[in-house]
Image 1 (tube, rainbow, N blue to C red):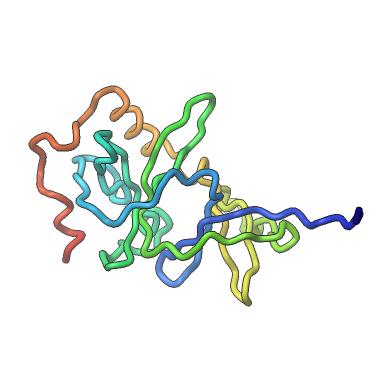
Image 2: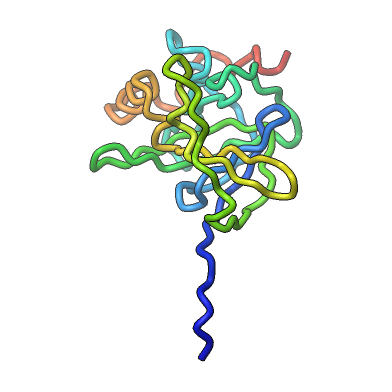
Length: 180
C-alpha cells in the first residue's frame, strides 16, 4: 500500500463572460440550458433579465456580464443559461445565470487556487471565492451563494416562490433588446 498523499482537488464548471473565464463549483450546478426566451419582469434591475420556464417553474435569470459591469450578453449559438442552486440560511433557491458560453468541467488542485486579492474597501469582491491557475490563464472562481445573494435577486426569488408571474401565461414579449 502506497502512503503517498494525494493533493485535494475540486471540480468546477467553466464559462465565459466576455473574454474572461469564470468557474463555479460543479455541485452548485443543477443543469445547463440552451438559450431560450426570457420573459422580462418590469421594474427589476437591468441585470435581472427575467424568468425562464424550467419544467413548468419560473426560474429567475441574471445576466452575469451586466451584474459584473462587463456589458450585456450577446445572444449567440454558444449562449447558455446555467441553472444553479443557491443556499441562503436553510433555504435552497434556483436561479439561472446567463453566460456567453460554457466550456468544460475542470478539476483544479487546491494548491492551484489562490485566495481572492484584496482590492480595498471601495471594491466589492466578496463573491470571488478564489483565483485558479490553469494552462497559463487565471480563472475567477465564483461563490454562487454570494453572487446571487443581493437583495434584488432574493426579492425576485421570493416573488416567484409566492406565486408571482407564471411562465406561459399571457405576458409581454420576450426580451426584445436581447436580439438587437
